[in-house]
Image (tube, rainbow, N blue to C red; front, side):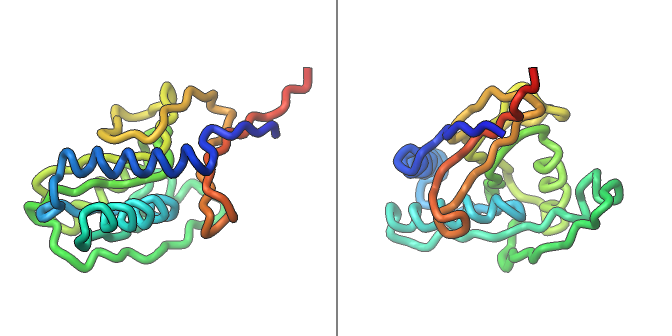
Length: 182
């Protein structure tokens, strides 16, 4: 596979910082807003946003993680069974503004599962979506993000990978394209 870096370390940092300021513009001091990361990779985005927002605001930002395994529409279609992660929402979302967070928005199916799973915890006042990477033109469902780090036009055969310093050793976003055999 050929790979192309979409966001390098510096642009990655700037993108996360910009998303934080966009969130602050909409949610002020986060007194009635919570961030919820979708497992598995949205939790990495939430952790980074939380850290940066707390530096900027000088106060704690309430965050949680949501496991959507059993809400996925492909749960029983996989050869290899999905292994559930841990949901960590130890706060009330009733009448709160919730920002669902994921690393890559592609078909919209993960977000749909996240919305279904979220309603098991109560009825939020408002739900918004933040995604680090928006892969446009490939939606199966009419879902769009309110906050977008970077939009990427990609083919269905391509893969976008958000890589984290804590996991892969460097913050970056990479587009993998299958090599053509022409």
